[in-house]
Length: 283
Ligand code: DP6
Image (cartoon, rainbow, N blue to C red):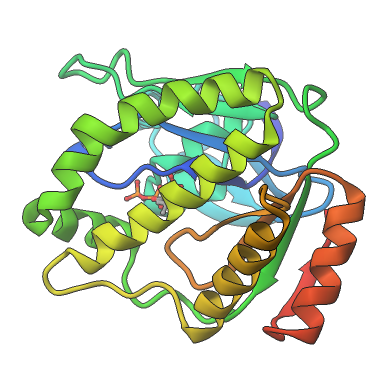
């Protein structure tokens, strides 16, 4: 017999960032994080196939049609447990290639929280869906590609350095994020864009402040990233209320979230006239 399953996995963008592990081997975070899952039909969908059979010399995994891994059948259950997902559930390529923690948030659509958990064995460090993809479907996400180069400092080594050297990281994880997560959950539940945008921008800026507070400092953003922040901040300030939210992960590319099509169109015009990044998607 052969048991075969194929899954397509979307990308997620954190609005409350995961940065720092309390256990490196089990990939357990120092704080809760919240993300929005992008529609796999529009961005970075990957197809992963897993086949398990007693007649294969080893179990196999394909990513986008290429054999990626041969795993011993003995290892497979441990592997999936480590990833905190059920075998044959939808899988993210990051999980396989890097054992990426944030990828566990991609197993649900919509808004997802990765609860840091308290247990040493990680059994309560799990992803939960806060709201499904239909809950707030007016939102428009624009990715402005500032640089398509591979990131200079990997998230894994960057966050390790931050945990070891940044006093701001400890303060953020213990004091700031717990309250911010509650407010973000409330903003998502009530579709309060003003609160959602303020929290998203503040958390992105604090994550990059933690990177700067790390020794040696880590710079993920570039001049163009800073110009995009200024452009959005000026627009938001001139209207007296947020028109668009921005957030940057461990790369210089901007993720811009508009509350509706009108604002996303205005934003595109401003970006094309102003900062000049290449826009690759408007969904
Ligand atoms: C800035 O999940 O890539 O995107 O678990 O070490 O592989 P590892 O890190 P990873 O880190 C993501 C960091 C982030 C914020 C986030 O997605 O929450």
